[in-house]
Length: 111
Length: 113
Image (spheres, rainbow over the protein chains, first blue to last red):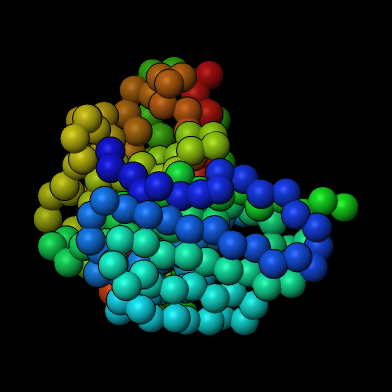
């Protein structure tokens, strides 16, 4: 099915570094969501964005809804070991509640 | 708030048998629940949308007679994988809508031998 373009696919970083990932779409979305999934678990909602240009923070996480409504980014500042996992973006149009998912960004922290 | 549980967390069954997976919203009522499956290293794939008191809406390519969904109450939806085959082995995740957003259960790992 339809997917968002999420990049990078994986990231190897040092503890304490900042992280940035993004999603782009050919379609306009009215909602952007960012989830984190740990191995063997379901996704956990991190940040929800509802308005173009909106910038929202959740602790060390910051996400923005792109002005064009076709992209979003997620930043993690001062990464810590528990940040490892797979981060998914998801977008939604107003016409229905179905989420369109990115392929995920796997975050790995080098010891 | 917005906690979703699944049971069982993992199950192993033999080919040809049926397996039922439960999805419960613990602290809210959900008129709509969603069932996804996820293969290793891949994103979530929506299988069906479950509506309380009515028939589920299946995504294209998902066999409704094989993946039976029952949303009998505002806090419980079940997915039954009938006549399971090894290719049905996957991670099945449900979600429930609360406050406009989807909250996910912890998933069920199904292995068909």
